[in-house]
Picture 1 (cartoon, rainbow over the protein chains, first blue to last red):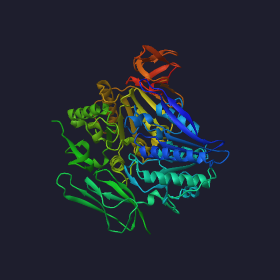
Picture 2: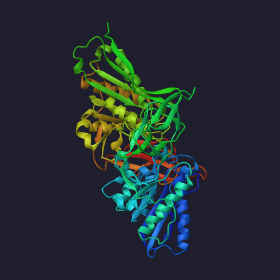
Picture 3: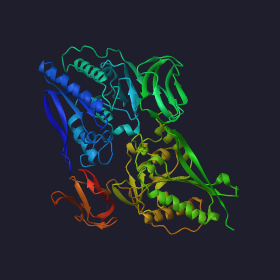
Picture 4: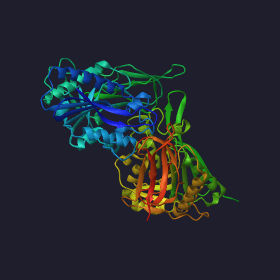
Length: 311
Length: 321
């Protein structure tokens, strides 16, 4: 393993922020994995740290293929992580809305440009990502529909679901989108959590990633455990939202991944002062809980849950 | 006796909050009272501000326009909708984005009625504003930069919007290249559905610059007169510099992290090589970098917040020979 500094940013009163990459093998730029880009993406960084641990073992066993290299960047935005802020520490901009970056531009554009220059030539790009809707997800591989998405490789992670979604205007400056446009086969991995560590789903993600590395001939190893699904491919628009009309204390009554029946209780909202039941959220159809709100308070008019509906 | 006006305050979007409160986005609709004749032909202008909770310059503009209308109610000949706080919780908590979501509200339009609460709110705002004869969305840059009163127009919509912008009494109209990211703004969404929308930038975040507020209020009164919404006297307005060239604006970004100390005033004409300011190190007493103009022009944006990272925007210059 070689540790190298991908990008460095100097500050007035803090130590320079160094974006470090961990490289395994030598030769063709085969696979690049990126972890956290936002200050709250703890799980994403954690998953990368576990991946690096596994790749060290594989390298020691000479299981990394000749002429192939893997780059893992666990954290692009340590400044924000160290002050507990989601976006950039001074101007609150989002590094993942700045790709492909601009080396003469503003700070986060420069970070994005510096990182992208180092990672844009990899054949496969994998990002441990987070969603702006705070909550728990059923682990899945997500891709934007750019015309370049590679669903067959996405299936090789053997996660329960592969989710594609239409591209929105604000997506055009994300890493995943720009990887695809520059010719990298790009995949976003969503594990269960973001700002808390879920070691089980992180371990499953590392195993899924190792399966892809094997399928692509980048490593030669045996993967034990983890997911073994033949994934269902969904479009994000086909997930059924369960919206709440009321606001208050929110309690889930089912778990992510649960198979539920039409009419089954999924969550309750109660009055925060006197405990009166305000609303029960019921499954609109038979299906699987794909996403659920997890904060103890909820606003009205929110998609609190999303279901994969069985047809 | 002066004719009365209707001033109807209502909520255009309500969302229950978890703990004993409801989010209300309020509108004050001013219209002629006691004269419903020709009502169906009344033109409608929407004055929008407060999408970013830390931009307050529009607060004074809203106040001043309503004050002027109430002073001469007999001159009102159409509908003036005033929306001073599209992000009321952001304004209340000095938060730029949508509090609780850390989300820039001006990057989620046109919204979605089937997603998070923020997108629902954005959807409702678009429903409310669509169909107006003109929307003016007033911003104040951010807490880092001071802007001369200006209107920014996406090149895609310039034919329709530049003539409207020229009546708004701003100093500068900047027609910029189309950008996919900006497609998620309120202005882009409304312009795309045929509702002409101007984006004003003036002043600085978290402050009110009264002289700019008066200037914009003059421009709004003039524009309302041109639309047939206002029949009263209006002050003469200035003709803005209009720049639609691809490279007409020079950006200054900080080459070093440090403290930026400006050496020139805002809206100053500078020659090539003139000093805009220094980036200094208070720990060592050194000048870390001098910011000089690469070309001659007028400085229309300048850094207000002194702390800069490498790359922080320090100023913008409109090139002029």
